[in-house]
Image: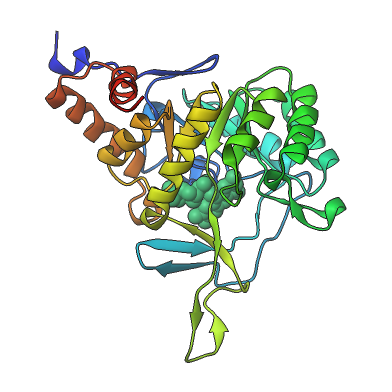
Length: 312
Ligand SMILES: Cc1cc2nc3c(=O)[nH]c(=O)nc-3n(C[C@H](O)[C@H](O)[C@H](O)COP(=O)(O)O)c2cc1C
C-alpha cells in the first residue's frame, strides 16, 4: 500500500459524495471548460459553474476587476450565456469529464429562479444546484433575497418545489445581521447544504481620476482579506443548523482549508485564488493530502471532531 492510500480525502455533502473537499467556486472558473487544458477536472472535488439566469446577461462595463490590499474587487454584473445556451452548448462538453458539476442559479424575481431550475431539471450531467440568493429582488424594491429570513424561506421553498431531482445548495449572502437565522430559514425551506459565503459589497476609488476603479461604482470583495470574517460566518452557521456547509472566502492554501473544516465546513470552494494561479484547486488538494499524512490524520471528519471536542 502506498503512503497516500492511507489518506481518504473524500467527503459526503448530504447525498453527494465528493472525491475530495475542494471545489472551484462560481464565477471564478467559467463553465469549467475554459480551465480544462490547465487543470485535470477529473481530480477536482467538483466545480460550480458561473451563475445562470433565465436569459443571457451582457454584464457590467469594464473595468470589472481591481486588486485591493489582500483581496480583489469585482463587478462582473452576473454576465452569463443564459440557462438554455448553457444546457445546449456547455453541458454536453462538460459531460466528457468525470467531475461533479453544480449549476449556480440566480434570478431577480422568484419566478426567474424557478424557471432556470425547471430548464436544468430536464438536463443531463449535473450533480446539483447552488442557489445564489445575494441578488436584489426587483419586486421588493431591490432588497436582497438573502437578507431576510422570510424571503429566504420563500425563495428556497419555491426552488425546492422546482428542483426535485438533485440536491439544492443555498449560497448565503454575508451582508446580514444574523446569519444563523438565515441558515435556519434555508434549512426549514428544504435546502440540502449551505455555501458560506458570497463576496462583501465594497468600493475602491482613484483620487487622481476621482472615479471608481471599477466600471460600476461598487463591487464585491473577495480573497484573503475576507477569510477571517467568513470563517466566523461558517462557525455561526454550523452552530445554528445541521446542514453540511461549503466554506469559501480567501482560500489559498491547505491550511486555509483546514481552518474552514475546523469551524464546521464539510467541504470548501476556491475562488479568487484561481485568478493568480489557475491550478490553485489542484495544488491545494495535493498540499492537503501531504498535511494529512504529516499530521497522521486519515480524513476530514477527524479534523472537525477534534475542534468540536476542544471548543464545544
Ligand atoms: C469575478 C467573480 C465572479 C463571481 N461570480 C459569482 C457568481 O456568478 N455567482 C456566485 O454565487 N458567486 C460568484 N462569485 C463569488 C465567489 O464564488 C465567492 O463566493 C467569493 O469570491 C469568495 O470566495 P474567494 O475569496 O475564494 O474568491 C464571484 C466572485 C468573483 C471574484
